[in-house]
Amino acid sequence: MGFFRKRKIKKEKEKMTLEQLQQFKQFQKKGYISENIWSLDCWLCETFPKMLRELAETTHGAPEEDFDEINNFPTKWIKDTVDEINRKRSNSIEVQAPFDIDNLFDRWELVLVRMAYCFERAHKFEDFEENEYQEEYFNQVFGNDRQKNKHESFKKWWKRRTKKVDGGYLFMRSEPDKELEKKYFERQKEIEKNKDDFKNEAMDLLKKYFYDLWD
Image 1 (cartoon, rainbow, N blue to C red):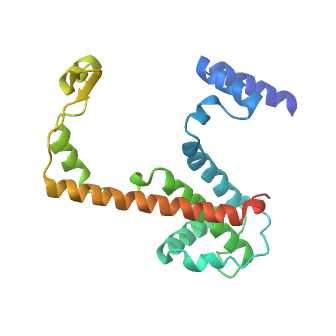
Image 2 (cartoon, rainbow, N blue to C red):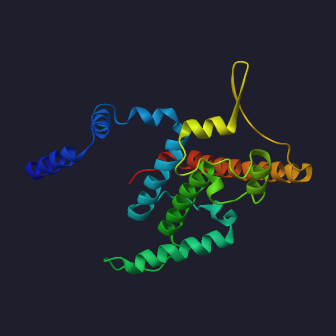
Image 3 (cartoon, rainbow, N blue to C red):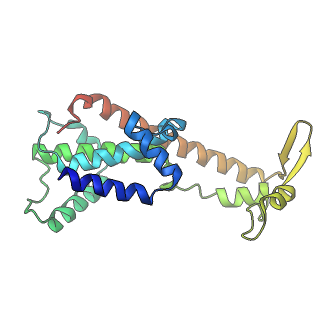
């Protein structure tokens, strides 16, 4: 078995670019790649939830807890998550019972999925909650042509969108409608608060179950 595994790894390495090969060697040596430390919050919120979700689906045990925090999870989120869990179970090769909210192991799975969900929302919350004033605000401030055209060189775009000032360059901008500006920043502040709330919930769950994240 070891022989075939080595042959498979060798073939995969032959397909790698030089950069990928360097990252592979780094990971073998250090357990992580250097790019991970450029933005550790992104790494944590992108990689850790994937591990939590896999643990939730494959775990064989659960801590002796009541998991009372489930009572505070949003009702709609619970329903959607349970529906997704049951869909996966029904498509599984192994025969699995439907989700039971009173079952210790099912409650643990729900907590793990919630933890993963909160970490994901804490990272790129803008992907899930939109600032409906952003497009119009950016259009007024930076213009409808702020984006680089498909066939436009970076040099040409940079020259078109910036002006030279003492000490460097400044992006050209205009004053937006004051009411629109107020709505945009109020909404942005609300989004940032929601994002921070998800981060805090994720961290609270992580702190409580830190020593239970094993199988």
